[in-house]
Amino acid sequence: MSLRGEGPRIGDDGRVLDEWIAAAKAELGIELEVDTTVLLDLARDAAHGVARPAAPLTTFLVGYAAAQSGGGPEKVRDAARKAAELAERWSAEAAQAAAASPGSDTGPSEAGSPAG
Image 1 (tube, rainbow, N blue to C red):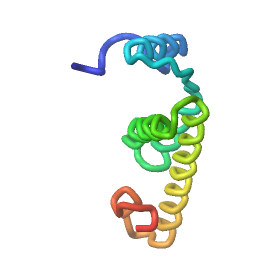
Image 2: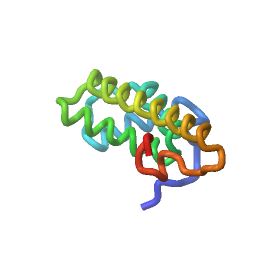
Image 3: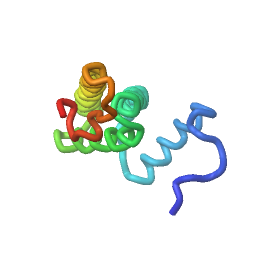
């Protein structure tokens, strides 16, 4: 199974994203209204503040956390807010660590935690 293919991509047309979300929800049996702005902002924050692969993994974890706490749009927003705050802290701590030791390439992703 390949997730890559030819055709329009998300950035090409917002309609494609709306259609994809509707199709994926139908396929997965999900009736939740999805706030794509919250999730895309979170993905951006995780990608830029931590590492690119953190984006999809973080959004998955947010969905899982929301489901464990009862589900629903508010639970998704709460979990997304917490994860975005963590990504912001992670990025700030990495920047501080880099400034403190200019010759070091070790960041939070290599050290295992923002504090090292």
